[in-house]
Length: 160
Image (cartoon, rainbow, N blue to C red):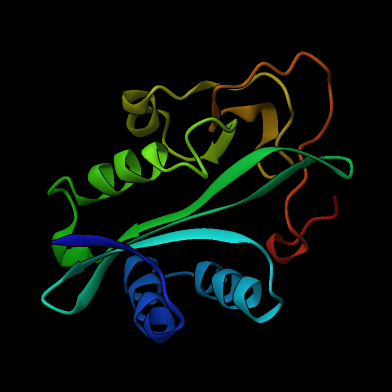
C-alpha cells in the first residue's frame, strides 16, 4: 500500500473509487471532476494497492468572503471492500503531515466520532452552510472568533 499525490492518469481510477464509496450519490464524483475541469486548487492523495486506487482524500480552499481562511477536507473515501481496515485513518494522518496542509486551519463536515480521533473539534465559528447548527461541522487549528458563513469553491454548490 502506497500513498501518492493524485496524478491526471489516476483521475479515472479516483472517480471510479468515489462512485463505489458513495453508491447513492453522484455529488462526490461530480465535485472532484468539476474541480479538476475548472482548474481549482485541490490538494489530493490516493492510496494505491496492487495498482488499484483504494483510498482518496482531497482538500480545497475555505473562504471568509474573498479571503482564504483555511482548507476544507472533502471528500475522504475508501473502496468498500477495504473499509474498516484503517486505510482512511492512515490517509488522513498522512495528509495532515504534508507541508501544504499541516499548518492550515482545516474544516470538515463529517462524523464527529471519526474526526475527533485526529484532533478535530466541534466548530462553533464559522458557520457551515451545509449543516444546520454545525452539528457535524468540525475544525482543526481553528482560532476563528468572528461570525461568518464559511465559503466553499463554487463546485460545492454555494457562493462565497
